[in-house]
Length: 302
Ligand code: PSU
Ligand code: MN
Image (tube, rainbow, N blue to C red; front, side, top):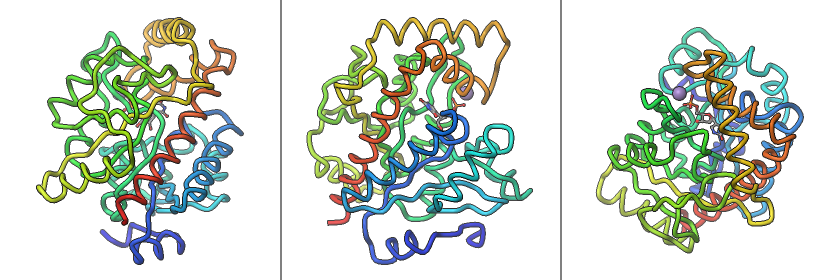
């Protein structure tokens, strides 16, 4: 269904020329942050990618058409529609939004699928979904997608709204290599360390590119997860993050929130409970990951 994919001129030309391109998700715009931080963050990630010499491709579904490379106006439009006007799209949602010509914001899973269809090898985001604390049956579609789709995903680990140990177990089962970018430990999103191991430390974009290239040469179809610690200056003290997360998770249970609504609900509560301080760490991680993603895309294009 090629006609469902629409490229911006810039991204289309970059892919044709074999120039480095970095995919970006749109769920963080509609379901992750309030306005105007959502628009500012999306644009700051794009700017960081350009500064490094790569082309950003933010992905979303606009009236049933999968757009690869949003304009500033399209980012504003999604932000304006928000959670109620835009469907959060993982794998199961894509046929619904395309078939019924709806608006959709792609999650990590949804963005990986589209990036792969489009021939984009690197995708930068904030936190991946995982296995929810206290609800081991609620495992994000992101984990399954990482097991099936050969895209390199750059993230800051996962938020400890998730059960990080169970999340690692599931990634292992799915066959996903977890790289620590200039770290020996899995980063826990707001904090630089979690005490949990990674599969391999890497120190340069070239090492990541070599691993992704070997995956392709071996014709293995899984993703590679690159975990990058949040910059030190913007780290949220682990105890503060933990307290807010525990309370937010409890409130979600109490309110009976389930399914795809859990992650946006908990993220919103954490923001309230930290008086917005979680947002500073969150934005710093996202922009830093965009930068690292661009460097990896450059290394892959050499
Ligand atoms: N974690 C974050 N911020 C986010 C998300 C996760 O710290 O914005 C979003 C991502 O789009 C991710 C999705 O793919 O939530 C996971 O949702 P679920 O747990 O319902 O699979
Ligand atoms: Mn879920």
